[in-house]
Length: 190
Image 1 (cartoon, rainbow, N blue to C red):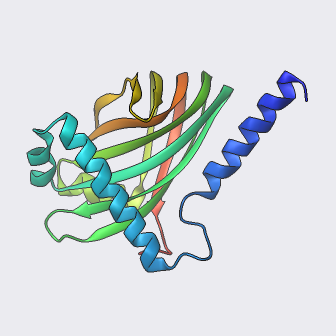
Image 2: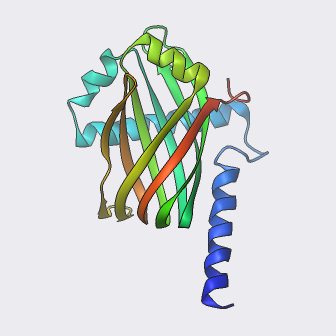
């Protein structure tokens, strides 16, 4: 296989793996999938609080919050990704399980696994997100991280009464993309 074909193969492999998602195994029950999502949520929040302990009160006092795990592949001028998560209404304690997918155009190369914590500053923003679920934006970042090795840029963004924190888990990526991200309710888990 020549270099160009190998890159295409790797890109297609990772894209297929991402798009199948974590919760598509037929041997896993609905309850087990829900536990997996909730466990991921607790783990990501703990990572966020470890880096920024003051955010524990911010999340607790908000109308609600969402935690998502996402994997993203950038190949030259295209970016695709998918993930899953849960949104929790702090007042009612209701959990809404959700899926996400993103696609974009721009320049970049690499694979990146990252998590998002979305803090909904009011009930209107929370309900709009659960029921409509769209987010759109530009992204520019550089990351080089494998486990505890390396570093990642990310940070905090506020859009439409939602504050978003990104934590890069693993991956190597250099990208400047404009992407659309769609969040929607997971009919199987709700």
